[in-house]
Length: 301
Image 1 (cartoon, rainbow, N blue to C red):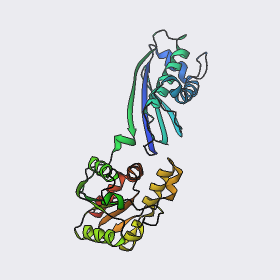
Image 2 (cartoon, helix red, strand yellow; image 1 turned 180 degrees about the horizontal axis):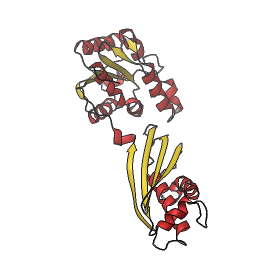
Image 3 (cartoon, rainbow, N blue to C red; image 1 turned 90 degrees about the vertical axis):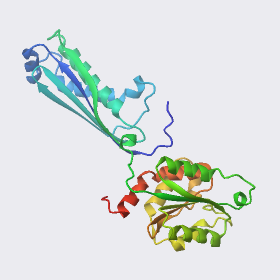
Image 4 (cartoon, rainbow, N blue to C red; image 1 turned 135 degrees about the vertical axis):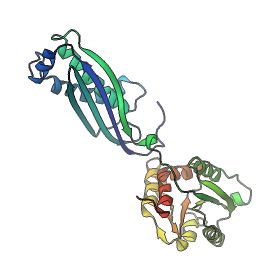
């Protein structure tokens, strides 16, 4: 199965349909009058569809088990055709389109089974996905031009005793989201140097200013103390999202002190110094956080 552990839970909606055709008007009338010998076609097929949705990952080996939080079936008769619609919702890491298609197909198959004693020419004509929402299908499209600065705060890296990996991975992630990184620096864990770097980037009107490292609890971890006095507005929601995302993966994330806020028109972030921690912190709030720059330039929420 594909690894989805780095994905965020988001609202996922999918709608699928199946078309079932019969050969006689009498078959349609029997359905309407609820006189099919095997029972109420729509209600029994609806129940079968619900079971089909829940059994999707059992039958399709690469489908992830996921919580179905809403399911609805609709039936529309047009001439000798019955359109079956299946709409599903969940808040999860992966979509529900396969489950929706499976649900619609099981409904159609159950209807076929119930109607075949009355009509030998019943046919399942089509099964298709109508729409889906959430995940990559709705990837954020950045309208504003966003410049970025990445500063690694580390005594050992600044002395050349250790190579920078976290900063490079942060830059790679930002470039994937169309952020143009115009500055990449390495400085020691000194409050004065961190503040001087932040002031310089604010004056240069850099859109996104990121500091990597110094968010822990050792005596030399001073990045939050350095940048907080220069932030005009903290953004607690982003800080909480970063910690929540991290804690879902390691309990040690609770010990990190990431700070996020606005300094004039710049978004300032302090991220953990570990490569994994820095990248996961970005994944927790990006690319959605980039919408902030569109808002600054007058876009609607």
